[in-house]
Length: 145
Length: 291
Image 1 (tube, chains in turn blue, green):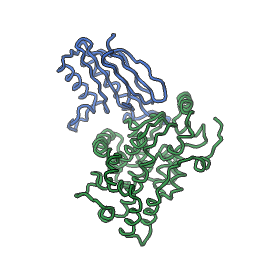
Image 2 (spheres, each protein chain N blue to C red):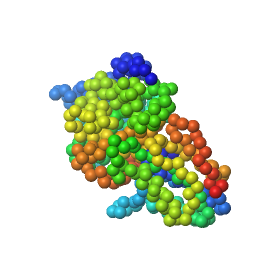
Image 3 (cartoon, each protein chain N blue to C red):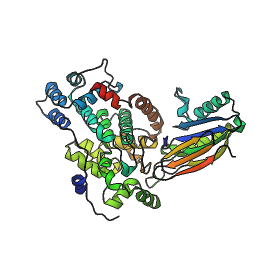
Image 4 (cartoon, helix red, strand yellow):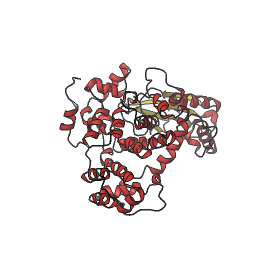
């Protein structure tokens, strides 16, 4: 998947061999809007992903995650308003909710203004990242912490 | 890179330059004529079967909210009106070159279409929030804003990585680095093409100033809507290439449109709902079946 300001997360519990992958658009659900698709927001989406993984036998104490994405546009000669810092806010939110849920963040590749694509090999645990226009690189291995 | 080429060179020497089908040009010319009628417009449109099929697909999409399906272009013109069909025609005509593979920008097949359609849909949503711009004009302008990339791509092939590095080192946006390297950017090429096709000035300006809305000499809400629509489609990652998010966003566009920037996330959610419903409107299978 190609990522702009969205934040992506891959998760693996090496003990139960349960893996997950998700891609969130916004940091928090809007207070005055009902959430029809929890996966759109980091707060509701991470909760949902981890609970699905637990239903399949994972334990959140054993879950390793990698976080990527959260790019944003350039500053036009002055600070970007908070409204334009969605990338940064998405990454902060993903880290905060990882901590709240007791997950271990093994690696991250975030920020900048590049587009990223990610491949996750659940069997080996390898996470590979490619920035459009550049060569693919190995970000981390979620089986080795 | 030496400034060896001009905008005129690009227009004259690019093989397979995006072009407007004759039927679409005829429909646009007819729509502006004082003697036009739904019959005369339909007659021109029927000359191009593929174009007619795409116009029907669009007319029947939930975007236009018709209470029943239309199966014939004449019916579409009567129900939607000449003005709307003129826009449908432009959208339908642009589809074949928006799905091209653009190696100069590292955009795979369909990627520019995906970005352009996302910009068009978000421009429509922003126009609704603003109330100061015509939604159909904004939708069409959003769809066409990057036509310059279709022409410029081949000239950037083999130089893309160098431009990426140059832009990153100098903290420049990608349109700025295009101007530094070539003397002009994809928005200026788009403007030249749009003028060649005699597009209305609101569309020409939106194509020209979509990255520099504050530089537009005449206030034009379509420019601001397309600037923000492009920002939204870009930031959400729709159809991005090597230039990625390397563009600037100007909050003056929000001010001019009277839309509070804090409403952006709500606009994004509305956008996603419409985009997910409409993105398949031109799937090749569907068009072939309709044709």
